[in-house]
Amino acid sequence: MKHWIIETYAGQSVLIHYCRYAENDIGKEALRQDIGGGYVRCDLCGEKFLPPTQPHHPRLILKLQPLLEDSIAEEEVTSC
Image (tube, rainbow, N blue to C red):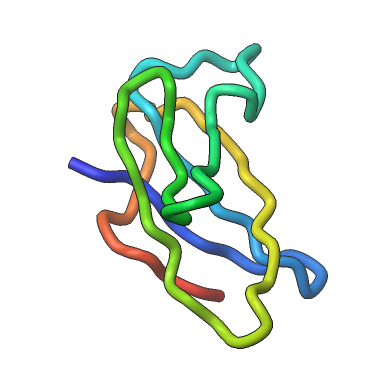
């Protein structure tokens, strides 16, 4: 099951991954983007996500959040 959402903060796109293995003190270092394929991969759980292609290839800020039992994580990409 994938837990990825894209939100916009101050005009910047942020890709947030809710990972069941993440803890509060782990930063975004567990998320890596494959330059060749464009995928973002989580080193903790192994999930991959291919961000939608958009004109001018906007950069995404990567953010890792722990998946809590009561948290709401979308299974598909949403934009605010």
